[in-house]
Image 1: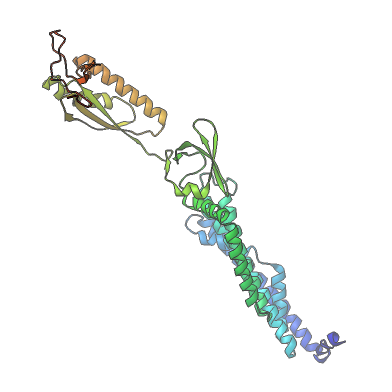
Image 2 (image 1 turned 60 degrees about the vertical axis):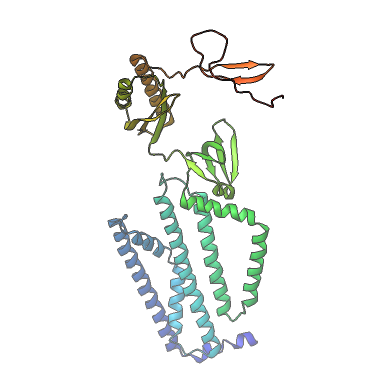
Length: 383
């Protein structure tokens, strides 16, 4: 009886006021529906006119598409109820309904805007825009929506007069306990998100990390799978992967090649002066190659050291090896043409088991059995 007694105010309001409230509600519904429809058409035209330079139009158009007809109807009814002179309990309840209705519609707008924005971001950074959603996209979307709806639920409870302090504290303590229990898993999850956003590598890239060389097969929530060059699959935790230096060979624009050429120190000066220009000709005959330099780098008693540097403009490893092979073969042909060699002077080592080890230099032409340099005795000497 107490419950039904709260509806006694219905009989106290005249029929004319009820009709007025109903008319206001209907007119409000029609006006809001027409305004939203016009806004959706207007923004849709803006989105079609410039999809690349007006991303906000696409987001707004998709967001307004989530307008709930139930929310419009409830809002119109609430507008009509404002015409009536309601008693204090019902006036407070109407205020709560205002908050819940408008808050729910606002959260729906934000929820869809987050979905569209994140989808647009990952689509613009993906190689294939039609590819299915990645793990990082799903994880990020889920995290943002969870936070949004949790905040809305707490706001509704607070608006209804419920003390949420203890509930928030419980969520905080529970969150800390869960985070400590699964900190390794959470570390890998956030590492997966970091890989997806920063993109140090993608599926199919050839990388070297922590001594493992291979191509990336899959980037999961917790681990990354790499198909090693030797054939086996290597599974590395995402957090451990980001702690090491990753070398991505697929993103290499070109390859810098530098190799030394050691020639006989007895090579004539005139021939040595000619060699850098001839090496340049050999390198420039190759395709997709940019010559950098060729110099006589060092002169020692053992060899004349030349250094050749060039760039292979195609990053493919097979092209690099083919080019290097042709350059080396051309260099051998040049050495044969000029009559120079890269053999160092022969040194002999004489071993005397009775007196110890003696190291000697190059032997002369006389075969007298004696070393040309004084023997250097290794080991303790007997007095």
